[in-house]
Image (cartoon, rainbow, N blue to C red):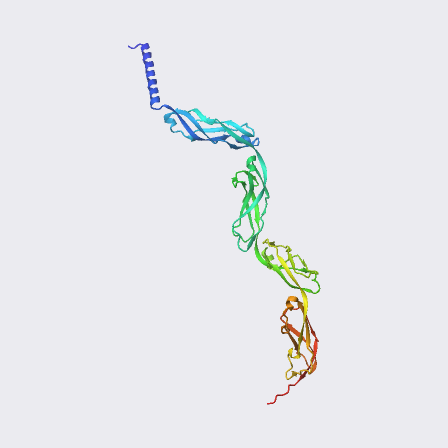
Length: 405
């Protein structure tokens, strides 16, 4: 029979044997090992606490860390960076650069042996407001024969809220408006985007975030220009021609305005007392239309001296028209030539000849056999004045003498 003392010794021996066996299994079959886990992202905690004091995290110098953990091999082989949490708590820090310790959270059953870095440099900045003018950019192809006028927006500027350094990098606030070959005025609500000076879109709070925009789109037409003149050129001179370059301009307006607009009128040009050519830039008088071209019309007014020339015509060079039937006009025994004095611009007078004029008498309604008739002329030449002397001549109608067979 085993005594109680011997029984206790046996139990202790069994426990020690079991412990030795367990230690052997642990150390040889599933030993404790150390593992490095890299690229663990650093999480920011309690950022909302910064908002109450007007701060925001502008940036951290390191976004990932490396840890060294200890655990049983069978467990540690399956662990990865997603099982480990690394974070910094930004509560209580002030604006500027702050060294904040990194905190590590591990799954149960693992020990942290080392990690790097143990502190992270965190830049806290004041949250500020900045007013930015709104730029409206037109996107899409302009329809042929139409003009896109300047946009009209319910918003001229926006208030952007964010970290000071980010606000300082803002280049523009943009509303992108697509016209898509439109042929009539468009109204749209367009979201507003903020871009940095490097062309990157910034994620910031914008107020307002949407603009109501109207883009006027009008049909176009080419309309001639008319130039009013003030005064009279110098005595003895005349205006040869008025030349315009260009002669017309492209305008945009409502269709009803275009259909009723006969011409564009410029500011008057003063020719009073002038004797030389005039070259002048024209200002078009505005109206309910838009000049679509950045073109300044130029007018050239050619002024020439007026000269005179005397032309002589004999009886045989007079054309008698509508002679009463059964009569002919008796040629006088003596006849003084008819003198025509022609006045005109020097360039028109240079090659003028008597053949350029037809002196005629129209006998329509002439009811007597003799009397005075009025001399008139016709010509394709441009003249300022033509005087015939005498204005009237005496004629006599006679019956033609029968011819002898």
